[in-house]
Amino acid sequence: MKIDKKKLLAARVLGAGKGSIRFHPSRLPEIAEAITRQDFRDLITSGAITLKEARGRKKNVGKKKRGFGKIKKKVKRRKREYMLLTRKLRAYVKELLKQDKISHEQYLHLRKQIRARIFKSKAHLQSILTGK
Image (cartoon, rainbow, N blue to C red):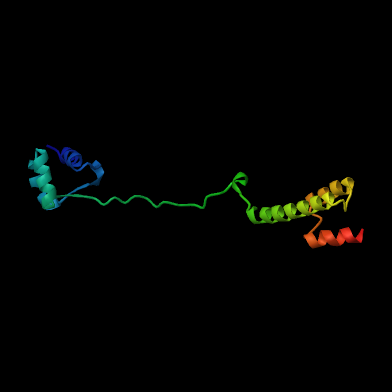
């Protein structure tokens, strides 16, 4: 039997490709006599048949590019500050309306200004109201 066929049988036993099988040159006659799978297993354990190391290839891991739709801004802190200030100012303006210190038109105008973030704080709102 040809050596090519022996390589094919050895590859089947090892579960590898035919190209990765190596025969020891001095033990070729012994390999040529092998017929059964058990013969090949014995030759593998004795070192007459070896398997080439898998070389593989270099894996180029590139930087992932992020699309515009995937960018997420950190808005939590800014939104929280806006919410706290807006709620505080709206509650204060509502209290002034209840106490009849401002008219309904003034109340609506102040609400629009609060939404537009004109006032930096409650003290700022109070100073503008006293200045009017």
